[in-house]
Image (cartoon, rainbow, N blue to C red; front, side, top):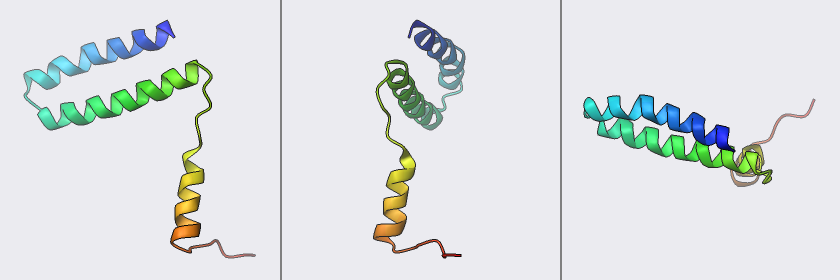
Length: 73
């Protein structure tokens, strides 16, 4: 777990100051959100918490809500 925190700290230390210096607020916001999501998912993985597959949600959306199915062969 300490390696995960160390890696994300290094990534943030190298990326954020440049974004702030160049006044790229939107890019900084997007980077922060994506970095936070990736960190949380990595932390859950390190702590052996089962992470659900996003394919199950996509399958439910596509097949059950939109009614699109694969053709049978």
